Length: 202
Image: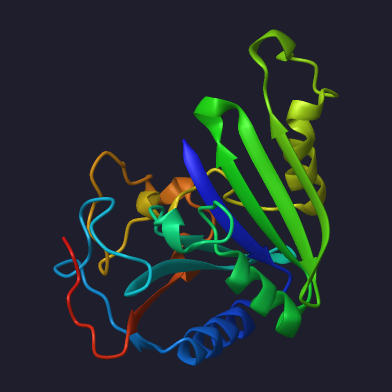
């Protein structure tokens, strides 16, 4: 399992409005997505042409943002499944934002907290095989403790696991049953496409 999520301490409507402004400033227009146009395979479109998101309803303090998983790291200053520029922009407008990155098969996780556009806390952990432990106080479980302390929901969910009429199943990724996605009925799909580019890979 690999995933990257953003969690914003703000209402869903404010998060979506801020995302719309952020992508408009980068030359992206909001488009309506449907299952017929939706990519069915990883690595078939470039993040500089198309961006796909599910935005959860606010659950407790946090609104979750789940983005389509594959990106080209050639255009990024730092590796990641979640967009640190979007995280910074949301934080500048709305306050606290967490960015999570997880590569479970490698025993790797990281988090960054942003406040008012600045990174204010971060942590990275990668298991070494001989240092793995089932002790819940071990550093490998710090991300678990953070998620529990903040009351963050759907932390193990990926964009590709979320069903809906505007998306298509993605190769190798199963849709979760609706009852397994907390707040599913309130999720909002957002798609942004670079102006003038209407080619969407499938």
